[in-house]
Image (cartoon, rainbow over all chains, first blue to last red; front, side, top):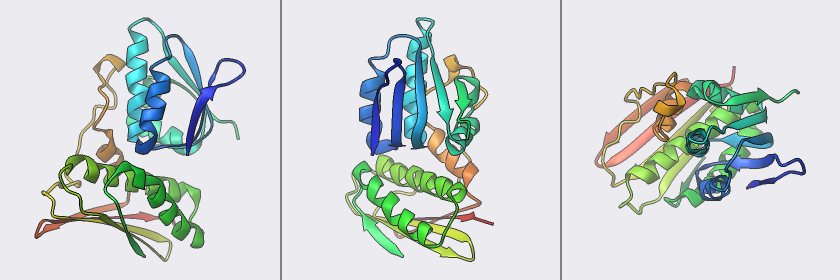
Length: 98
Length: 133
């Protein structure tokens, strides 16, 4: 199960497991983001390369207009995936404080 | 324990639940379960993606012995695709130079402890292990 939607402060709340089966749902939401945005991963448990692809595609599109994604509350396991992928150098990532 | 799954992305939740049940039963730590699930998904989706004309199910086996998790994925009547062949991704490239795709097998090769591939009689078999100690 994967859910994505806006929080009360305008941040994008992601929860559950972002696997390849959930990419269409995530991509559809991300395609509507047009400005600087914060993704709150505090309730996101898992991400695979399919989910990373959506983040990268969105970040590249936003960069064309000088905007960017910021990702906060990232758990240790997802943070490791970002690090292995080199995404920690192309996204503003903030780990979850346990 | 082994089970067959339909060759489509909708099987991912069932695969996760199948593996999670076995890993939880053996009290495998989350730090090991996460990469095991990730490696399973990357392999399964790779099989789905690169053999689109095949409709045979994919057999997934999960075994835990002495803290070592062994996962085996087998598909039938497919072309050879060696997942152990080294995939290089420039993880230091700038945002402009990065392109979506190609990360799955790169991640797989970096998060498992051992990765083996066998191809015989149009049968592909991938085995990986992850140590929990």
